[in-house]
Structure formats: structure tokens, C-alpha cells
Amino acid sequence: MAGRELFVWYRVRREHSDGAGAIVGAMQRALRSAWPGLRTGWLVRDSDAAAPTWMETYARDPADSASPAGIDGALEAAIAAAAQELEPALDGPRHVEAFERRS
Image (spheres, rainbow, N blue to C red):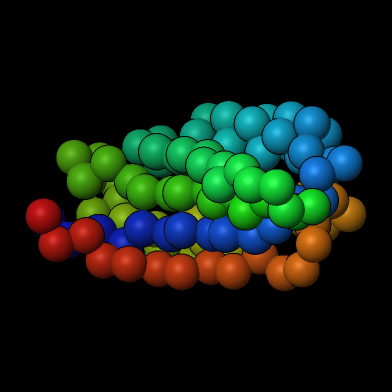
């Protein structure tokens, strides 16, 4: 079954990484609680850069009949709204990429 998934990447200034990590963790827990079947992930590509790249991932369980299309517009808007707290820690904008799962 196909399903739309989101991959959101951005850079976090190293001096804000601890606080930003707490925000991402709390944000994803709250989103999973509010949106049944939501699966989240958080990846960091650490480097010597002053602002390592972070990526959040969002997908919905295809077995969840309430979300057969995956991440819809309402959920994407909820993710964006929840992420506003991260703004002071970012080095540049958040970039949202959507992909359709084919298998």
C-alpha cells in the first residue's frame, strides 16, 4: 500500500543541540499521542560543522485504517506548528520533503 511520508531536515547550531534535542523528543512524543498510527524518527548527521544536520521522519502505519494515505495535509500542518518552538536553535530553514512509499 502506498503512503505519503515526510522527511524534514535542517541544521541546528551546536550550542543549542541539547535544548533542541529535548524539544524534538517531546514534540514527537506529543504528535504520536495525538495522531494514532504515527511513526516518528530523528536522525543526526554529526560533523565538525558548527551546525550539524538533523532529520525528522514521519510515516503512518498502513494498517491504521484512519490513515490510508499516510501523512495528510492536516498532520503535516500539525508537525509544522509543533516545530515552531525549534526556530531559535536553527541555522536556516526547515526543509520538508514528501515521498510516496511504494512497497
